[in-house]
Image (cartoon, rainbow, N blue to C red; front, side, top):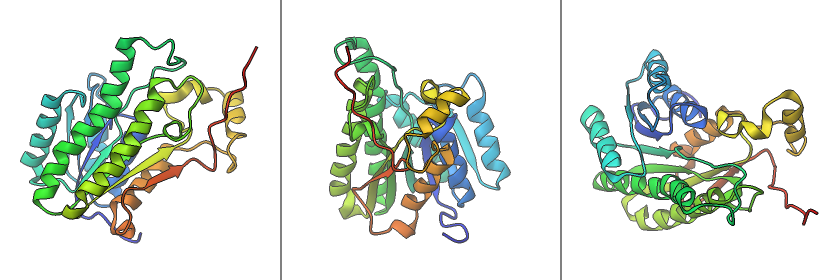
Length: 261
């Protein structure tokens, strides 16, 4: 993708404070997009720092708090973006939570609701709100973040795997329904990515080496590995791709556990 394939496009990125979300926002800016970035947490100023990084690349950016599980916050998110930029060309749903180590038998109703409401319902609300705006302009691009454990069950993934599997079907259903409006909808399913989100898998040289040895390409993903694929799906280079799940995992597959003792 030579030059700036997303020049002057307007992109919304949720969960943009750190990790994959921040990498996606900055990489979209490098590809030419202006950004509206949102996150549940804003008190540590990391979201504003991401916005400043985008501005230093020569592009416009706004940053706001948003709880995507709440329709009122999603509505404000869309309204703020339209007020600043006048349109929405790209939506990337990166916001998500995970309660590690909790099986479905151990999962409380409160934790189930927290994970499903943020990851699945929140992604749906953002897709619905932005999709309505995009449909009016007969153009748009939505990229949802699923996971390898949305395709194959993972040890200790619990409700998280269910939410990420739901995002895959949400993506495919929306791709079918929104195609008439020239809106493409795709998902990315990362493997293990080196972010604070999943430090338990890779924190420390020995643990990282052990995890990397299970990946055919021999290393764990960096957030930018995922972000570059988002740019591909958001650009015209993927203009005939919709309803797909792009696995970005270095060839890694979630291992099946034994019965144990």
